[in-house]
Image 1 (cartoon, helix red, strand yellow):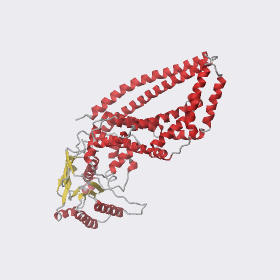
Image 2 (cartoon, one colour; image 1 turned 45 degrees about the vertical axis):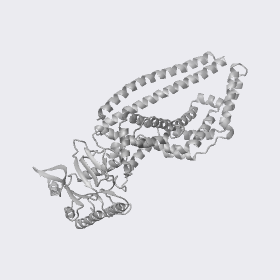
Image 3 (cartoon, one colour; image 1 turned 90 degrees about the horizontal axis):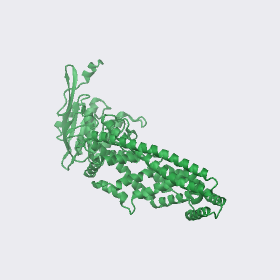
Image 4 (cartoon, helix red, strand yellow; image 1 turned 135 degrees about the vertical axis):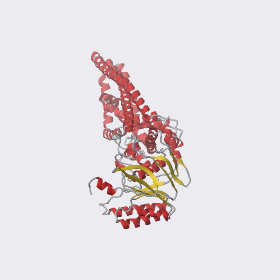
Length: 589
């Protein structure tokens, strides 16, 4: 069994040492760049009267400077990546210390109309999403939210194998996340996709071949200049002719540059992510299937994306004034790169959506693999087709610490319904959310907080939280009825496991008892399975009439004038309620 605490501490220490080494290299690199700059200045000064020395010094200087800038850029990238890796490992150590404040809550995904997500705190502060999410791209974050809310029971063994596979690759997952987190997203993936789909080329046909012609002539002009066959003024005239040609297209070039600059970093990082996917051997068939989507073509997706990233980076070099003047005047640089961009978009824009979806998938599944790695004592449910829907030993809520958590055993069969009674604060609602979350986790392939678990896949629907809808002029009671109607309608479409907490709270006790009884009878009639928690002991009488219904309870005891809860799930009907005791204990009555 792996020790995640030890792993994260060791990784943090290892990356910290590497960071110190890179920082020293960066300091040396900065000094060397400054030295090269002064050498160029001195060479130009010394050769002021000699055109050959000036041109040669500038050309050699530009080449040397570009090399040093590129090398410095690589070192800077390594530094930032190591800082991300250190932060990733520190974050995991913080989470183990119950500090998840640095993780996004996912509150934007809260949907009160969803079949279960709002009821079981799937999103929001201190939610399961916040606890499990480690995505580093917006697309991956959205994908993870979709996985959690999909309510899909398809190919659970395949999902389990994928998560197991990724849980065994912690270094790979962290490297993927660190690389992805270096993306400074200016434009979202949908915006990039829209730009690629709707892009209209502007480079005239003549401009597609003119840069090559001008480049050849420029090379000849430089040779002639060194041979003193032409004057420096003639060379300058040629330089300005090139700049004039660029000027005819400068408006369109600037528009494309602004658009390309917004996506440059995304493609720079995404080709690296795809490259990691391509060059990893996965055991899971699901991961292999996703992998094939980026390596199935004659040319690997990473190579194609890298090519585009390099073109965008080449266009960005126009920002270097010295390089921009000479490259555009002698090579028509901007037009050349714009044409290359247009060619790439025309050829590859239809493939980008698929490649980006693969990246989002791996980003989302990295979070699931990370969750499994962090909980080596959790078990993957054994998937069965028997009548037993859920049989779990020591089932607990994954968001509760082991010190506070009380685990329970549960066995519930197909077409069976539990009515759970219990005192206030005895643990009914927590238990309902534990079972619900176990079903969600099982359906997406995660291991669950239990010592053993057998599970027959089933979709989940719940009604545990209901609120007034003032905008729709709907009362609390009507909102409840609407939710219960949704449940009944869903049961006509498919099989669902139903979890209900104190239904029909918006009406009087007598009406509530009668209505609750009829609703449970309806659920039994349609052969539904599930759990309902209630304070209404009269509802428990239905168990003597319907063999599909069984009573369970959570107890509360008063010992030495203090309320005591054991939070244990028991057979039968609760006999000890605590409302009167608490009112008196708190001096309310």
